[in-house]
Length: 445
Image 1 (cartoon, helix red, strand yellow):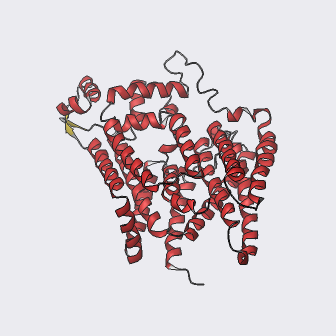
Image 2 (tube, helix red, strand yellow):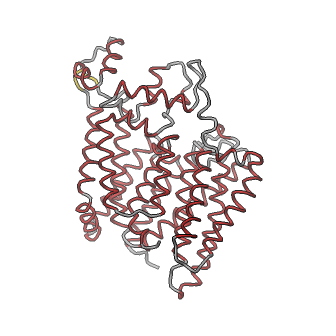
Image 3 (cartoon, rainbow, N blue to C red):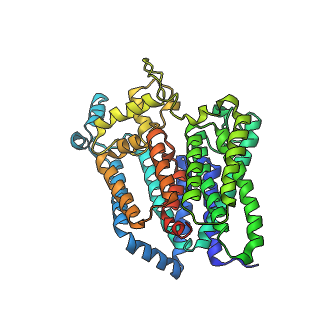
């Protein structure tokens, strides 16, 4: 059977997303370059089609101000890494000028960014995000296409969870180039960090729920197809939820509980539908996956996993080399005032941390454990304002306030405040997909 042109583009898109999933969410400088190249090639390939160009043109006309602000933000990221006369740093980054002055830096030029190479790769990542958005609007333009992407994410979550659970039951050993020894007692799959893994699975879970909801509303002549589809999706959901539970991520498990509660509330009080099967599936997840399987895997820790800030807000130790999550957040917040207006450069937090604590274990130096604090510190007030203006303008154009919007806003608040998952490229892409396709969701509710 011949595959349609649109399916070919979508399957290429799925292949690239699979690369993100297998290789730690695309979270490395090498993978950022590879993913940028792959999405750029796919984008150029899509531009050859006249209909795709028309879809992109319509999207641009409706969101031109958001796109303009985002392009200004990208230019600002370039400005952060361009070498400027050192004397100019007295205005743009006095703190970096003081660091250079102490080191007797002989070069007459330096960038605002503390790590120009990392900032350049982050620029490529943010450029990839808008290319990704353009591709989404070109090739996924019907409900059927969105459902296909939902099914792909649901299946991808199932495969990732299945592998993660197998590894977890065997002590989560290292294999090939995947290093899991840091989390030998929890599921991480192909991801290095268990919370990032659980956040990824939460998006796969939402995709599965939406497929089940939509399958209840399709025509009766497709009843047999829907029957088998529901069986597959239910199987996927079982493994996805077990994967989240066995990650033992407090944030991931807390957001799992929030997601299920909101879907139940929505089904009980806001959806006018005589088919109660979706409600029963949610209740079955609560009974079997969370309570029974949660008790089996977590024993007495089942409630502890949902108290996601329990240890993180414990008293801060006094020695310089002992840090918990909250102390690192506090450090990042304090550093913001030294780089208030123009930031210390995207991707430069680890360098900043090592400058201040050069004897500290680098395992804590990668991120601030609070995305909102780290983003503001990296971009400064000026750059962060450009990014926020772009996002807000785009969200205002959607003009839909529904279940998924509410859940995503909760995700954003929790992750931005207490985690660094929004610095992971794959999580950024999934957020963009769900928000950009939000008009499609409104037709289902």
